[in-house]
Length: 181
Image (cartoon, rainbow, N blue to C red):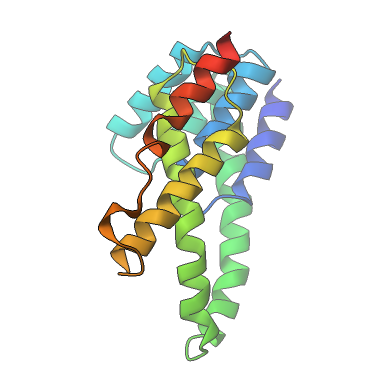
């Protein structure tokens, strides 16, 4: 079990930007739904403890590892999450420094912001609604990206203030009620 946990967190470490928060829905799906190592309520409680504790938000990996495989699992999960990302960051930072004066650098930064915000919103939704079943991560991400894009247009002055469709706020609730029926 520790090996599975380590391989999973190592693969996640190469996908995340700005900590583990954007990938919380995927972690919850794998740990709770696929593997059944934790209940939704256990996962939510571990997430709350990790967020309340001082330090980096990757502490949830250590808490999940401890709950699943004891002290060894805690060390394996934390190392698997941190070491591959640290190595990748070291390599990419050299390239990023070479792009310092490139016109591509601000474009890349702006392009990464909406997906990151959408994933964080999706993570918040999954944590806040552990009782809601049947919603796929893709449906949640789609709604989050759509909402973030509309808000970005309003903030940038490209859309009138009434441009955000009020139905978007209730779309996830409707999708949930259809999936439970």
